[in-house]
Image (tube, rainbow, N blue to C red; front, side, top):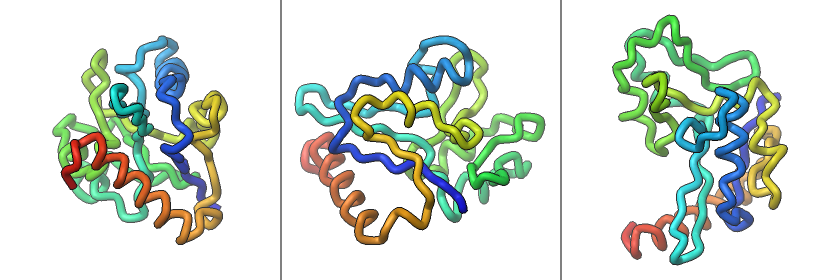
Length: 162
């Protein structure tokens, strides 16, 4: 059964430890700019939202990739085949959640690969704001409530705009 990251923004304290362990897992450096998860924050309002690839069921990034470099692996993670990637960045433009970014060192597109099925961000999140759960464990009601919470937080960040 496929698994996915479940993020509870209500629990996030903005410590950004997830960013550090992600960059260390992939590049052996503690550098949040090289992380595949980003904590969006408004410290003045006390709002923190960890954002990463949502491993969409029907991923727009995969549909728009002209070389088919983006694919779903055997664990269900959306991955990038760097042998095929031409660096056009269409995937970045078409991801509706900003889940794909550019590694500032390699200048290649990067996104969450679920650490091969054992996400480091989950292990080190001190408040349990990030969980790795089976897709069928995420009930429809929980998803709807979570989406409402995230939408409300985004409205706060954006100054009441929606």
